[in-house]
Amino acid sequence: METLEKNTQKQIGEYVAEDYRTAAVFSKYKIDFCCNGGRTLDEACQKKDINSNQLLDELNAVLNNKGNQAIDYKSWPLDLLIDYIEKKHHRYVEEKIPVIRQFLEKLCRVHGERHPELFKINELFTGSAGDLAAHMKKEELILFPFIKKMVNATLDGKAIEAPHFGTVENPIALMKEEHDNEGGRFREIATLTDNYNPPTDACNTYRVTFAMLNEFEQDLHLHIHLENNILFPQAIKLEQLFSE
Image (cartoon, rainbow, N blue to C red; front, side, top):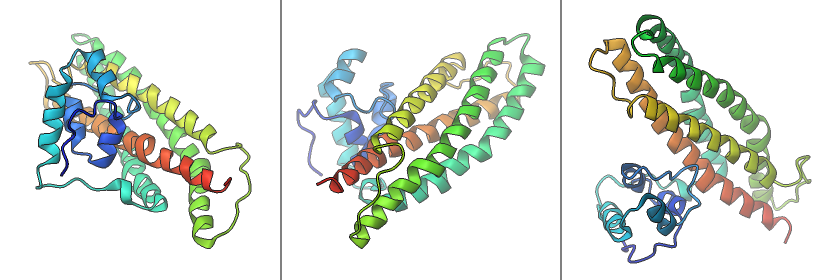
């Protein structure tokens, strides 16, 4: 594996798209690699007041580890990546939301008086649940089918009709904006939960709920990364082929 040397002008999202194991390094320094993956490493380090050489050293250590290689999502055909996102991440969101909401409601009833932050956490997650459901439907019914249509047209050597939304960049811009909103919500949830560390008087339900929220956010990070840093840029490039 080649070292990163002094390439601090490369975008965060590009590092993670090439090897998802680097996400753990960025997460350690609280650098957002999914919603804000368009920043260069240098920009991210300056904002966080982090030594870029130290960060590059840690990234190199991960990349040079031959064991436990990351899945190379970037090499997947776009239609396969879409199917994976829907079956792995969209289903996960649909399955976990009702469970977490039920647990949060219980925590608010039982522990809300001593821990009023639970009401805000519940409010934020409930808002996220509704918006994510609508967001995923827009992807499944509008954006993803068009990307698959482009893939099939490329394989068949056929032209495609211009979509009603003009260019694929329009729905992509909306999806990225909605991703930013969810990223902001979960940053606030992470702060309110002390990074998902339950208080000393927490019961088992309390601990399980925080663990589930933590897992939900981690899954959302990968979910958004696959779209923002891999699927969307490649879909834009694919569309450009039809205008050449």
